[in-house]
Amino acid sequence: MNLRKLVCPYDTSLIRSFSRREIAVRVDSPLLVRDAADVVRALGNNLICVILDSTKPLDAAPLQNEWKGVPLALVTASVGKFREVVKKLPLLRELNIRVCLPASNENIRDVRILSSAGVPSTIMINGPEVDWDALSDLMTYSLFGRIPHAPIGPFDYIVHHYDSAPHLCWGAAFFEDPQQFFHIDNKRNVALSREELLAEKFIGCIDEVEKAGSREIENMTDAWKRVFTEKSTCATCAGFKLCLGIITPKNGQAKRCSAFFSEMLEALEDLRLMREKALAEQKTWRL
Image (tube, rainbow, N blue to C red; front, side, top):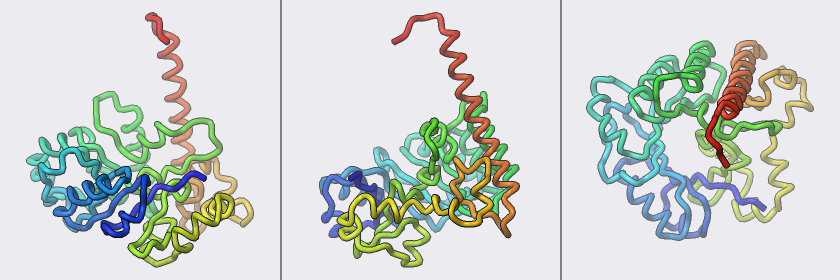
């Protein structure tokens, strides 16, 4: 059985109870970033990253030199004032950091600026209240922009993992994929998402869940399949292969989100054809 990656709080006793697990450890203070990373590694686990839930916008985040060498997801509500962010750019470019922002119109705009300044970022798309046209423009810039820029998630995640498989859960770009991640609290209770963890909607203790076996776990985590057994607009959506029903259409109206994911599928196919053409035109031999 493939063990899920874990998203857990910074709790030494909890982390010590695991061995050789892939862990993204969550902290709520900048002062804990380095300690959390060191503890995960020292206790025999593999560090995916430290997730810092910041109460401050990026312009006011107290970035630290000691974070160098620590893979970091900085989750914040906004970028803030760019004139202040500019002062932080040299350190931001040196850190192994990805700035994660909710998909507001302001953040969709600011992520593009961050990317052009060389700072990797991710737009967290987790609801129907999204300006799909603005998001489409950002997707196009991320995939086809000719000027060098830093990666933008979830688009870079999708490009690197998309193939002819039946489906792709791009929520993994921000740890929201029950096929890959379990969210656990300090009592070892398992939730299938951050939202369900905060709401204490647990599926059981991790020892019990993993002891149940792979088939039982798959039944719990393959919620997207229920779209086909229920009367859902998503079941006939051309973009379902990417969305998987994660974005519940507002009032059952899926026209705008469907158009976005369908457009992205076309863009991915265009990228594939461009790469095949580039390889065919290469004159130098290759292995």
